[in-house]
Length: 139
Image 1 (cartoon, rainbow, N blue to C red):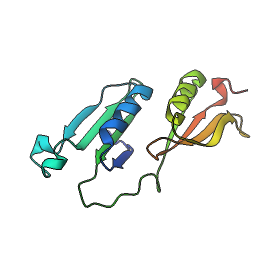
Image 2: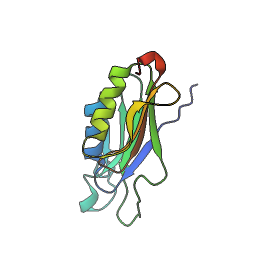
Image 3: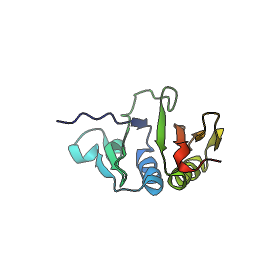
């Protein structure tokens, strides 16, 4: 049996938009279930995402959902998602997509430890740390 640890992001009605955004950048095909699929929630919530999972060609797994009505939500306050590897071109593509329409917190440049590293907050308020190891060709 294998145990995995996966980021699970909550949204207030924007989960479908978010999973499509992440799919465009990271690849893969999301699996979506709505509250309506399971007869849960009221009519206004039927199309909200109860659970969505994106598994990318690189084996990354990201899960998202919409919070039910009346559930308080503060996006991005207590989680950062880290993408790291040794393919600078691939990670640069992720960085470019994730930071588009968002906020660059730390630029994606050569870091003191020799890797290329940056931090951004995407347009959904989620913080991403992207790190390409020295093997990836950081200048």
